[in-house]
Amino acid sequence: MPNLDDWIRFHGTFEADPNKKVVGVDFQIEVKDTVASTNGVDRVPIYFTDIQFQAGNALTGWIPNTKELLDRLTWTHDENIYVATPNQFNRNPPQIYQNVEKRWFNIVGRGHRTIVIPNYYPEDWDVPILPTGIDLTIFPKEDFDALRISTNAGAVLPEEQQWYKAEGGIYQDIKSKYEEVTSENYSGSEERKEQEIHNWENIVQPLLDKHPIHTRYTREFWVDGAAAGSEIKVHATTRTATVNGNEVKIVGERELDINGYKMPIDRKKFLLAPQGSAAIRIEFYKQVERDIITYDQDSNGNYVKVKKTLKFLQDVGIGYYGTAGFYQWTYGKSRI
Image (cartoon, rainbow, N blue to C red; front, top):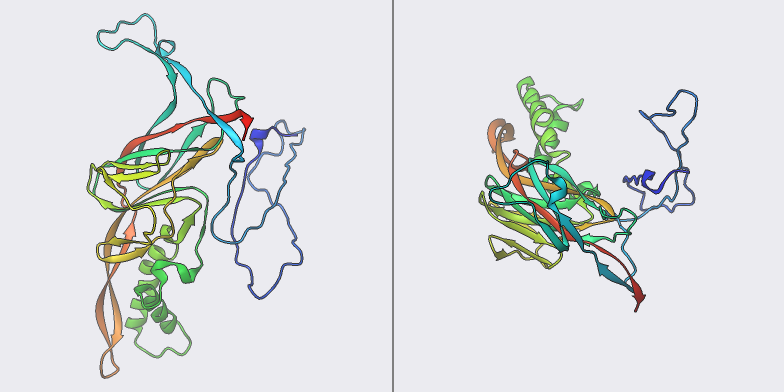
């Protein structure tokens, strides 16, 4: 049988028919691009277990029973063991730190990135580590219009809930014109047809059809825009969030003001690190504009060229740096 660390959790989404009930499930595993043996003779089996179906767009996780009393872990950090010898130190010689309580990791990135934060006890890998709150401090190197920090597990929203696909918006406008000019009954000019096909296939669909903000994650925290060099803190251990020392509203905020556009957000939840490691997504956005030449009907019913501006959030490669820190906990010996 495989070791505990060999198990991998997979997840996916599908849309069920709301007018029907599930009476049975057929499940089949298909494996591609994997190693079936190490020497061409011995076969390596694949095991699977625990299939769960869950409604909604938030993936549940595991947390310890609250009746367990938790112990905070401490350790000794001896910088001497990492020093090459012989060596001389004129100013800051290696030190020994006793009763260290918090793990720290440096963060450096540019553009949308997924970072992995390990949550294990290096002094003894057999110590059972519990989920813990992560304290994130980030400094963007450029101005930005929106920031989302989230877990890496989530689901794509139904199309009717996707912000850029709302009725009356430019997405639906260009899509309907594309469907019109590509239908068998179209009798307009070839120039208009080519232009509307270009608008949909080369501009609107690639930019908005699978836009990242149409995905919601189990835990995600949104921060409104700020200037380059701003200190952004999203600290789970104290349940506080600030930008340059000013508090960020945590409860009750359902939209962000993106340069006059009200963008709905689903939740603001602080990030946790489960046992082993946590995959955290950091997404800095800048609102950009793209002009589109399309055709609208005038008062006489004739199609004339008009220019419309598409505004959307985009990953423009904003750089950032900072730290991720957290305390570590394990089970206590008593129960409430």
